[in-house]
Each structure stands twice: as structure tokens, then as C-alpha cells.
Image (spheres, rainbow, N blue to C red):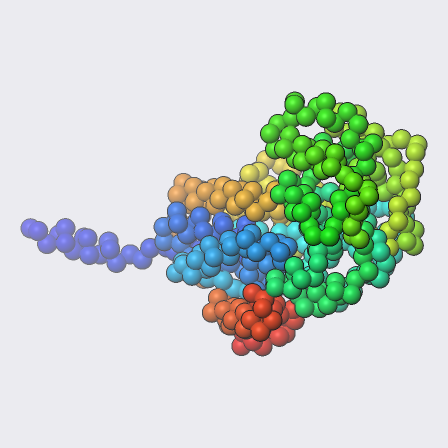
Length: 457
């Protein structure tokens, strides 16, 4: 009489559970943070992180300034995620080249696109394609060792660099250009860029923004670093700050603190004690035309928060011009509903929309990070949005909104030169050993072929 329940339970327990297979395309902060959340909160799942480069960490490795090692501490968290038994890292696999989105949709129950923003916005002004005009994104990639960027050879023979844009990327670049080489030589900056900077003739870096001090996009931390940089004088234009002090009391706290720091620095300005190197923030100027070694800008005035052009012009010296007006994503696969105008995937809070601007959600397809939001915020912002999209994925699985009635095979890597986590560790070890002899945390390998050789794939 008691046999029936036992037989029933035994046959029921023999039914295999379906593994929830998820592909995350992009091994940067958004991809790792999303994987972290999903692995912790979704039972019986397997997550593959696909990255087009042989190495992980995206902008943490290739975007964070070398003199900001504390920001890279998040790599420790990402490493724990990669070592989770539910997670598999697969480097050297590019969406649209090695595998298509259609194939991933067939091989996984859900696909999360987080491959970031690898291009930049253009100024669309005359002579923008001159050889002395490059993007700040490429310059950052050059000193951070992004494969292919080692061939950039920026022109550092003149004495003045003009950066168009006033965000944190722009101020990071200004700091690297003006920093004494001794402050950089013990970082993970690439050896070739360190050598180029050691022979640089750059004495002045101008940071040009179209709006005023109250709209400056850099943060107080980055400005404070610039103000403390050895042997560098920050030179403000007093006319840019007319009426600003009267508005300080009405500002919200972060903006108030930043503005007060600028005003304090302005008041302490002493032109009789100017150092050899200068940092020059220039407000209320929009680029109009680029010449061989100068930049013509139009003078603006503020109307509320909007910059309005006047008829006045100014010519700024510019031996090298760096464009720093924002990153943008590209469409890696024709199956992605991609908003070319905005440079991001059509989505609603991370759930990809079927027909672009329609409200129909493509169940099982998601996006996070700058690919979904546009290039906004810092790593903490990316973490919060990635956790949010990760929660959507968990909720959609648990609510049976993602079709999960059969096992999926996942990506078969036998025919691909995939760099698994243990093989990345070989690259990591080689870089650390190469850097140790130079007093650096690592010496990055910049050749993909060399990376693959070291990884043994």
C-alpha cells in the first residue's frame, strides 16, 4: 500500500530539470554586473559571457585612467563572478563575425546585449579629418593598450592641445598630458605611450565647452586632481564667471560644491606665479572651423541652460585637437533593432523592442550598459542599470515569460578560438610578470595574436 507513493516520487525525481541558458554579449562592467545578479538570483541557470577581445573587463581595462587604480578594484568582483560555477567566460568571440544573434537566440533561452560603445560622436565641422584631429576615445585607448590603438601616434610635437568637450574623459586626457612622467611610470600605462609622453612638448591644454561653468560636465573629484597636479597652473577666464557667484546659494549640493571649488581657484589665481605647464578651461565657446594649428570658435551666451551663439568669434591655438563629445554604440548584427540616430538599441528599461519605436517587447532579448542607455554615468550607474536589467531577466524566467520548455545547447566553442577564463589567467599572469620588472602593476599585451599565443589557443 505504501509502494505507490515511493514509485511515483522516484519516477518524478528522474525528470531532468531544464537549465536556463543565458548569453551575455560583452565582457565589460554591464555584462559582469548583470551576470553577477542573475547567477545569485536565478536558480538552475548557466550564463555565458561572450567578449570579442581575448581579455575581459571592457572599459575598466581600456577606459579607466592608469593613475586611477582604485577604480579598477571592481575587477576583483568581476573575477568572483567569472569563477562562479554557473558562469563561463568566452573571449575572442565577436557578435556578427564569429556568431550571429540568430544563432545565439537558437542556442540560448535569453540573450543580453552589453557590448558597449566603441565609436564617438563627430563635430561635423570643416577640416575635422585632418591628421592633427583625433578622438579622445582613441587617445584613451592608445595610452590604455586597446589592441590596434598602439599605431595612433598622436602629434605631441607642438605646445598646445585643445580638447573639445568638458566631461570626465576630457579632463582625464588633460591630466595625462600634463602629468609629470614620474607620476605615471608606476601605473599600468602602456610603455610606448609613456615614452611618447616623456618626450612631449605639450605645455598647455585647453578644455573647451559650449556652455558655462554652471553646466560643466566634469566632476569635483577630477577637477580637484587637476588643481593639485604638480607644476601645473590652472588658468580660468574671469569673464566666464560673471554672475555665477550670485547663483551659488540656489544650486543643488554636488553642483554647488563644484562651482565653489572653481570660484575658489579663480580667486586664488596669480598670474605672477604661473608654472611652465597650464590647464585652461574655456567656457561658452563652440567649434566652427579647424585650421592647421588653430581652432575657430564662436562665442556663446547662456539662455537658461541653453548655449546660444553670438556673432563674435575667437581663434584658439591648437597643435593637436581632441574631440571628446561623447561615445556611441554601433550595430554589431543586422538582427538587432538598433536606433542609428541615438546610437543605442531600441528598448524599454532593458527589454528590447521588436520594431524599434513600437511598444512590443521581444521576449528573451535584452540590453544593458551604454548599448541600452547611451553613454551616460559612471561605473556605479552602469552597475545599477545592469542589476535592474538582470532583475527583469530573473523575473521573466520566474514568470514564465521566456519560453523555457526544452534544454538549449549553448555555444559550441570547439570550432572557435575561444579564450576561457583559465586561458585569460595565463595572459593576466604574463602581464603582471612583465610589469613587475618595471615597477608597474602590469605591462599590457596589446597584440591580439600575442594574447592568443600566450593563452594557448
